[in-house]
Image (cartoon, rainbow, N blue to C red; front, side, top):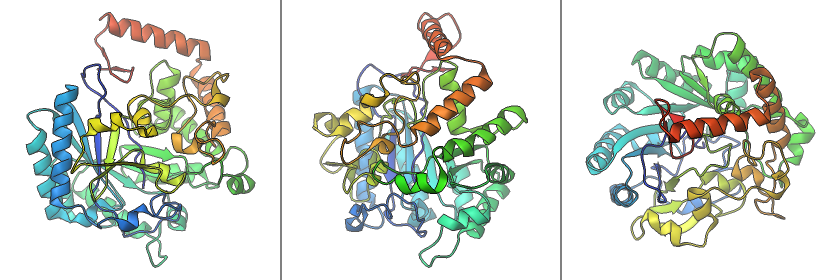
Length: 415
C-alpha cells in the first residue's frame, strides 16, 4: 500500500527539513494485492531485506530524526508505521516502539503517530494501543466486496473483504477514528463504492489514482477509455458537495478544491510541493518516494542507511531524491503552457515516468486531472485567474498578520 500523506507543517526555519519519517517496520505483507507497487510491479528490492525491522534500526532511525529536528529547528514531526503490513510486528512491539518514539523525541518535537494497515490483523488489543498512544489510523479498502476482493487478495488468492471489515468493526467498537484509502477501482460504479465506504464509519476517505507509467498505461486506456479516474471521481464530488456528506473529508477532492480556492497543495499527489519525508526500510536503508518502484528496479534507493548516515546527508547526494524530497521536481516540459501548471503542476511524480524521457512528462492521468479541474472550477465558480488572485491575497494577508492565521511552510494558511 502507498502513502498518501497530507502535510500540516508547523513553525520551521528556512532550512531543508523533514516533517515525516515513514518507517517500513515490516517488509512483508499477509496480503498480495495485484496492483501493489512493492511486490507486484517489478521491483524486487524487498526480497533482500529482513522481514521485520529490528530494535536497533528503529532506535537508530529515531536518533537520526532527533538530530534532524535539532538541525532544522523544527518542533513537530510525524512518525508513520508502514509496510508491507506494519501489524506483523505484533502489538507488544508496537506498544514499545510508540513509547520509545515519544521518549526519544519528546524534548525536541511534538510527535504525531500514525499507521497505514490493511486491518486484517486488528483485534481489541490493537485498538486499545491506538487509543493509548493516540495513533492516527488509515485502512486500505477499495469498496464493496465485489470490487475489493478483485484486487486485495491473500497469498492463496482469497478475497480479504470480510477480514478487513472485521478489523473495522474492532475500531468502531473501541471508538477509534479511522480513514480509508481506496485505490480507484477502474470501471466500478463510483457511487456504489463511495456510499459503501461512507457506511463503514470512517472520518475521511482518499481515492488514490492507480500507479501506472507511460510505459504501462496503454492497456488501461484500451479497457477503460481516456478519463476513467475523472469519470469515477466526478459523481463522488457532486454527491459530496451537494448532498450533505461534507463532514467526511474526501482527501484528493478536498485538496483540489483548496488549490482552486487559492491555497497550496497539502498532499504529495498534486501541486509539485516538496513532500519533506523519508522512508526507512527494515534494514535501515533510507529511501525517497517508495511509489517510484513502479518506474524501475531500485528507483526509490538513495544508498544511505540510518546506521551510518544522517537525513541531512540526503542533501549531499547526487540523486534525484534530494530535489524531490526537499524542493519539488521541475515542471515537465509539456506542462509549462498549461493553465493548471501551478495547481496540478504535472501530477504525481511516479505517474510522469517513461523509460524514454524519465520524469519529463505530464502525468499519465493528465486528461483525468484536467477534466477534474474543469468540473470543480465550474462547481466552485472559480476561474484560473481568480485562483491566482486568491492565492496572492491569502499569502499577503498571512505574511502581514492581517488575519488570525499563520502561513505554513508549504505555502498554505493554517489556523
